Image (cartoon, rainbow, N blue to C red; front, side):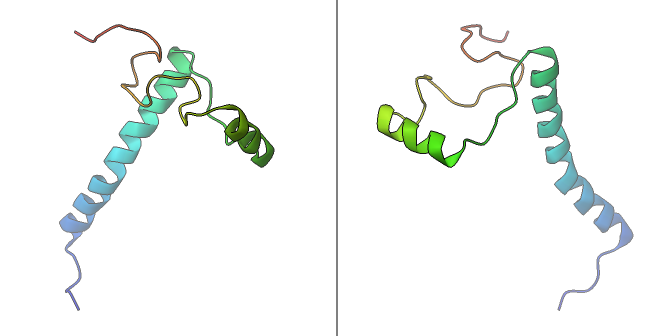
Length: 80
């Protein structure tokens, strides 16, 4: 069994785990607050079945997924 971590190592481990979560959460909240993006909702089971019957693509009419948090989806702007 490994020896227990030193205090500084525990702090570093906490920062390595918490910092990415903080950054992603902040980016999502920024997009929703200032860019006007709506909250994503989990689809109900009936909605999923209806969409599978009506649509071929898993993108549901969108051309891409993801992206930078400061660029609105659907805009053709490139960051400079």
